[in-house]
Length: 261
Length: 56
Image (tube, rainbow over all chains, first blue to last red; front, top):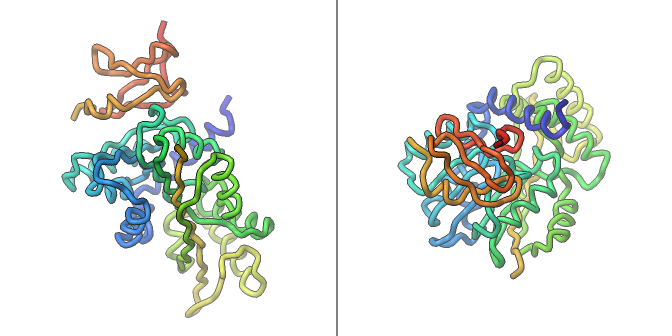
């Protein structure tokens, strides 16, 4: 019998095998300015070995490649591994490798990396603290972690409403965490926050739906839930109507963490 | 393209985090400690405990 964890991994694989190209077309996924931002806050050094956890199409790993010794990307979806390898080859990046594996049980030895990065993936993890613990384990003492993800409202009812909308669009969404929960997790892993920034990313609803491509019944429910949030904020997503279309904003948080010596 | 030596050198068993050895046929990575073989399919080592084969 499948455990909840294996069936969730299957959901991730199904979603991203079906939607790999659509995911790669989401502007913030490929935005060079945002990729450069992640590289710049990381403090990566030319001799560093970098790990990209849940590397997906590999854009983060490939953004780091020119700035470090080597990069390894790990992802659970083979289709992403194949696509990322082909893209790295096309870009003639010789110091990037992509590897199949689970973020919760990384196939990597202790302390092998100077830096571990995870972008837009924590909301897919059923057990985010296990992933954070694995990222910490594979980084050397004095090394750094970069965690970037959308965050949910600090109001539990709004966070639950927001997460329901995300799961309707993408069944592999597990849970967006409030920033305070991220920070409690970092403290529990004895990771020191050396940088913290939040950014708002605005979406038109139609554009946003394209990344998940939900069936019509779930799309209708998403419209209902967001429309219900126009007058009274139910989800912390700043829902508004612009030129007749529903728009909303995700709040993204970026953290740089240091593993104490 | 075969699996690169650099990548093989860095991979560890996802269960015990110990070292792995490439099989003679080049079709898997063995963890002696856990007695597990992680298959290599189309040059991608499948580093998943659930998909590893038990070694005798």
